[in-house]
Length: 165
Image (cartoon, rainbow, N blue to C red; front, side, top):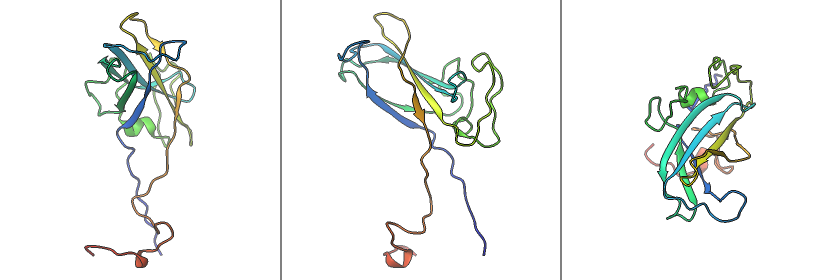
């Protein structure tokens, strides 16, 4: 008997959506030229391992709602000057991986098995021009997936209609 396993790369993008509110209120943040930064941090939240930025985001037409596709190839235009330039697969990998000491990762980071990453959302309203970190940061954890399954809802292959075989 032999067992074969295949690893599947982490998806390159993750959808980030929600609604922005004015600080300390339940009023939506309506801004025609908002800047939004999405950062991925280590579990201690002291090591920046990914950063992208969206400019001229118009939340006035959406009543404060937003939706971003976070993640990109190395060198993509939406990555910032602070982005250390890692692949998305490296960013989420906990196995035999490390992030060296840098200006945005002063102690370096060696992921442990099961380590989660955190998403920090930074907004810069056009009215103030001052960056605001939304709190709390959002835990990013993995969800098991399979490209081949032994059964579907308890049904084996022989119990299903299979086309083109």
